Length: 212
Image (cartoon, rainbow, N blue to C red; front, side):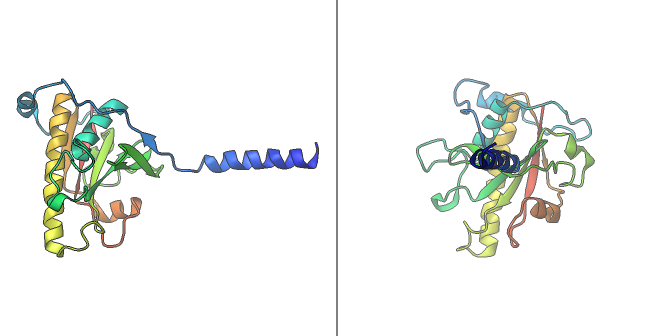
């Protein structure tokens, strides 16, 4: 085999090998914004699924897309979100999605998942053993850089309020989609911070289990 041909083969194999270790973003389907269960019916059915019997079924990309969009997606123009944001800021609480295939961060601008790692951390991030049963754990983490100009107490209050709004939206969409959801406050912040590669001064607030 000529030298140039051998070199091309080596380059091709090297590229393919390297690609296998590259992170992969996931494009989410367009979220459902019409029809479906009424708001008041969703409120009536809204509930936290018991932990011990949390289901282990799979969740489709369409279902995950709807949940994440409801949590902090764009719903009007370029500066309108499904939850209230202080002073018209962009969403300053980020949602990390932990599943069987790894950990992703939801990018509301573009509505896609950006891969953080390919490790399954669902069983390591909370005090309860049943958290590993959920198809996904949605982890809420304040973006400290986005609120760096505010006093720490005020920044924390804004973040806590945002998580409350996100959680309620997730519960309502879960009810409308016949999914199971459960908010978890007893988490392992140090492990989460390590696995998500968070900045030193960034700590998660809580997470929601999502199943079917």
